[in-house]
Image (cartoon, rainbow, N blue to C red; front, side):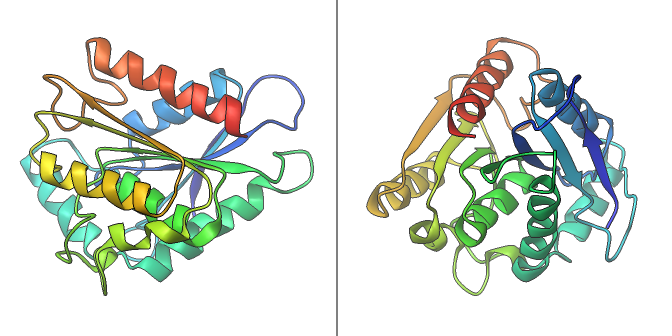
Length: 224
């Protein structure tokens, strides 16, 4: 499985973070995201979640790229992404890399993957940014039951960040996710940014992206 790795300067071990990419694959934006985590002192690894069907996919952020990305997203299964993230967790826990406590940062599609991984792999901390399709069964990742129903399996902390103008994650979904995490006794924080749309992180301009970066790095600094 191909993966992009960003390493902090200096000898390890360093806290380890798996990064889940958007529908566009391991593109330049995702690599910059991993690099920024590394600059903050985290060992970051980005698995190519499309490696079974379209290895190396790096899609343009245009209508055709979105169409192809949504098509590839529907090839992903829960067991497959858990296997891929699990292999990254094992790698991070290897000698001289990271300690036993590993986190995950997932953005959009990657946020959905991170929610699944948090429930299945015992991650110490999970930052899920505007993950779609958590409350329904429209895509293979959200079957056989809606992914939000996996909340009781989460043992670590969860940070859920979304904009109030997100067309993929409506307010009703945000509320349902918060209720599920509370009902399962998961330590969590839900932050809704005013006037922020889907995709404001990691490269979006304005205060929402920078505040999200601060919250993400604070989460991993204290939990890992």
